[in-house]
Length: 88
Image (cartoon, rainbow, N blue to C red; front, side):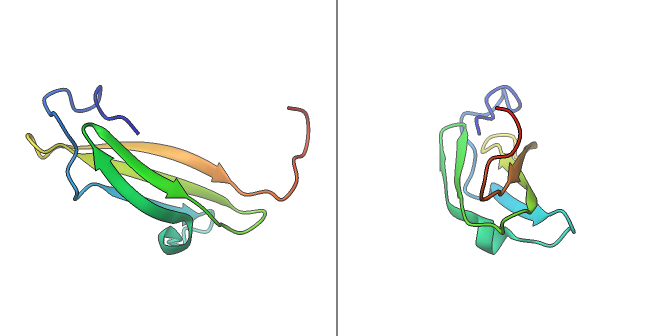
């Protein structure tokens, strides 16, 4: 995730930035779903992996600016399915 627009007064996101995942029941699934995390400049990256077939996960990226210490959040929905259903 690129936080350039959300944190315009910063030049990078810090290592204290977080990426978390919760399933539709609200259970923290970060240890299973979020793999390797890294930061580079204003970008925060995380490998999204595993998950349980049929479950939906809300993945929250929270970038913390190194200059302002302000936080910005971006959210991604991850749907785990073993087969594709419907029209593409």
